[in-house]
Every structure is written in C-alpha cells, then in structure tokens.
Length: 442
Image (cartoon, rainbow, N blue to C red):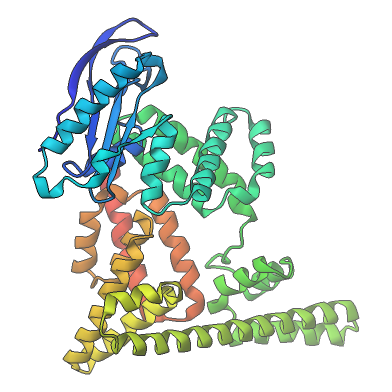
C-alpha cells in the first residue's frame, strides 16, 4: 500500500511566514511509480513559501525503495545531526515498514543489506545507474546543468552572454537544448512559472546566437542565383554536406541549367577566375549529390536485408534488440512504406507481419528516445487526419514552440531521402500541430 506524506509546518527562512509542507521519508516507487521522476526532478520535499515565493529542498531522512531494481537505499542529511543509534533506529523502522507491507514471497535478500547514500547526489546516481545510465552520462548531464546555470546568470549581460556562447558553442547542441526544454517543462508542471519563463527567455537568446551558424535551407522564394550565391559561401565539410541535403529538392535540372549558363557566360567574357570557381562549384555539388545518393542506396539496402531477417526471426523482440544499433530513421520509414505497399496490394498476412515488426521496433526505440521524438514516431505511424489528431490529443502537454522546432528539424533531415509520401504525411500533421498550439495559447 502507498505510504502517504506527512504534513509538516515549516517557517520560511527569508520572510518568516509559516506554512505546511508534505514531507516524505519513505519513497516506495513500487507502490507509487510516479514518485521516481518527481524525486529525480527535486519535486519531493520541496518547500515553496506562498508568501515570498522563495523555496528549496528540505533536509529530510529518506528511504528509497524500488522492488523491480532491488534497490533499498537510505539517506540521512548530516545537518539533522543524528547519532549512529538514532540513524539506525529511524532507518530500521522505515525498512521494516516497507518489508511488512509486502507478502512473504516478495521479501528478498536485499532487505537484509540496505545501502547507504552519503549525499543526495549519490542517491540520485544510484537510482540512475540502476537504469543503465553510466557515471560518464551523469557527469555530462551535470556539466550541462551547470552550464545552464552559468548562462542564466549572464542572461541580462549581452556581452558576457555572447562571450560564454562562443566559449561553449560546441556544447550548445541538440542534447543541451533538449535538457533545457525538459527543465522548462518540469518547472511548469511544478507551478514555478517564473523560473520556467526565465529559462525560456534564456533559450530564445541562445537560439538567436547559435542558429545563424547552422546550415539552413534556402527561402522558398529563392531564385537559382540565390542558391548559387549561398552555396559559394559554404566551405567543404559537414556544413557543406548538410546544406546540400537541406536544399537537395531545389538542385534540379533547372538549377544546373542556370549554373551552366553562368559558366558559359563567364567563358565568353574570358573571365577565367569566375569560370573556374563556378565549374568547381558544379563538380562539388554533383560529387556530393552522388555521394549522398550512394549512401542512401546503401542505407536502404541494409535496411531491406534487416527487414528480411526480422521477418524470419522466431523471437522478434530479441532480434530487434540484437540489431538495435542498425535500426535508424531510414529503416523505420522503409518498413512503414513496405507495410503500406502490402496493404495496397491486399496482402493482409504480409502487412500484419510488417506491422508487428514496426510496432516492436518502435517500442524498443522509444525506450531511449526523448518524449518529443517518441511523439514524432507516433505521428509517422498514425493515419492522417484522425489518427494523427488522436495522437496529438493524447500528448497535448508536449505541444509548444520547442516541439514544433524539433519537428521541423526532423522533417528537414528527411528531405534528402526523396520520400515524398512520407514528407507529405509529416507536412499534413504539422498543420494539425500548429492549430493545436494556437488553441493551447488562447
């Protein structure tokens, strides 16, 4: 049975106002699974003064229990100044309370040796490590959290903020902005709108500084001359490859005809420098398009072979997990397309088989994905408009400008694959996303 929190009266150290806080000393995620995320987000035993708004985590003895992971960990804050006997007595009574609430067959050996966490951070680490999150991953996340704090402190000083952005530009990647967006969502869920707005303001300032340096697609009304000018300004390397991929649909026969006309005009004017520069540009573009075509073909070939292998697997889930590293967006989109072809041809058995593979793959992928990417994958699989509308309704809490930006980046990444049907599906779903965000704003 759940162990309820204990209402405790506290006094605000800032304004001296008295108020009541619900304090938990026993966190049993076997009985109340939602407590795990609340605890890791610092929302358990968090006191916020209703008078002045100041807040912080209270010092409280904690026993954390997760039966699925066989975790039983105690944490006693040093500021409580408890003697060894007192610690043993309090912790022992909580452990006994957990054990007595379980039937005899569930009282396992780990109850006899409960672990001790010396700090709150070490308790968090033990919980996350049991989920397969390594110390290196934890240190990386802590570094990102520290960077968010540092940037937030400089948010009102434009010069200092710009300097920090330049110093940490490589760290301001997708994972960083995802963590920042998750922090905003967590603050809003906890009712701390002031802090959420502050983080949102920081995110906007960072995006303004980081986004211009990123490769981009040309505007929809760009002429062939605009495209040529843009591509001439992109250096070889990753930015070049990304720029070609983002603008691939625009690099059509008309584009190369316009580029060739400029080369011939330069030749006619005996402008050897321009002739050489434009000719080299044409070769670079053609070479990159061919390289990307070859990579796409090879990726699709690998995906097709893997689909065949999974179709014959006796234990589908085990086979999917075995090939987890080989499963990517190319595989998922190709699998979805094969399923659609089977449906069109009324091959019910094959469509069901491919559907079972797709469902298993999505379930396995979702274990490692952010909530935003899980939602995008669900939209990929849902039929438009009713299916996509139902998916969006189920995930209204994720619908905001940050999600729309992530969605648009995902669509841009797919444009180089020339899967017009998939892109049209995502474009249609985007119209629903925009409409629902507008409704939520109102």
